[in-house]
Image (cartoon, rainbow, N blue to C red; front, top):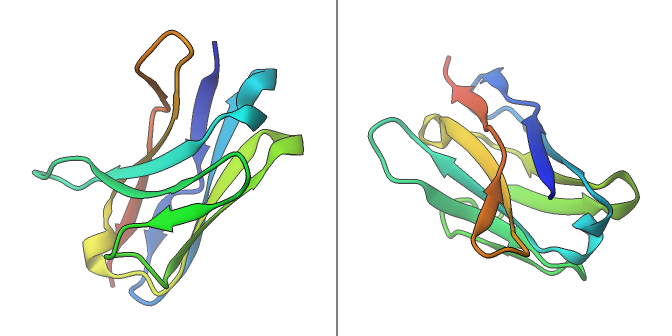
Length: 116
């Protein structure tokens, strides 16, 4: 069973950048698509973007042009590079992968706070 650990969150000023990491245990990580989600206080969890096993990415309109997802299969890690951050990007960010047993496996999340 794959386990996921997110890291890289923190406090950043508007216009700043952060890079989040989603590190996975398990050798099958390289054959799994990975999704990034976020959940702001009082709001539903929303999809930020995804990356396929082949490296194809898609993004929510709210982050398109500012966020970039990449993966390093040798390190079993997926990254979320976030640039030009806005206060409305403040949220807990999660990664997930599909479980071979059905459903999805989630990490514990990492807090991103954008504030001056």
